[in-house]
Length: 171
Image (tube, rainbow, N blue to C red; front, top):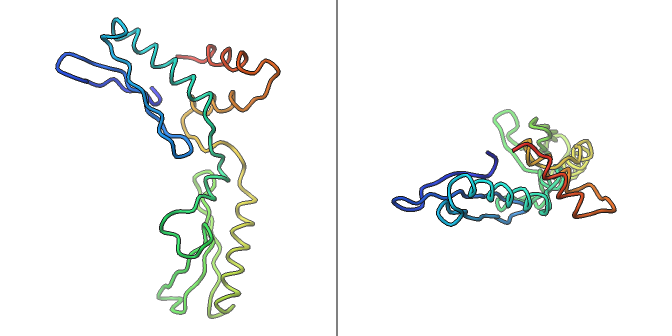
């Protein structure tokens, strides 16, 4: 079950735990079997809370995820880095992006283009590679994708339409 697990909380106490991350924020809640009158009611409450939260929270798109700057970035541009290899001792600037599970890259030799020109070309290549990415939600689980799609649909009924869509999902 997506984002839900059944764990032992104490000697004879079990609880269903919902846990997932969106946009750097962790969403987590416990549903005790004892408080909900058994394992099945606690599981149903956990599923309902998970579906409600997943329908409300914002999801990063593939392009937004590819533009997140990592803490170890030293070039100042996301997806652009400097490499030295035995075949390129003067180094290369490389633009890299992972789209739909496939890594794509373009490299520019410092020896051939010069330091600044190779860097500028790598930055431009990174932008070009990003423009080829589709703007789907950055999700892998089928249920999470369905909930994200339902949440992104703007209808005149708003919340009622979203709740109806959630109620129709398979459990």
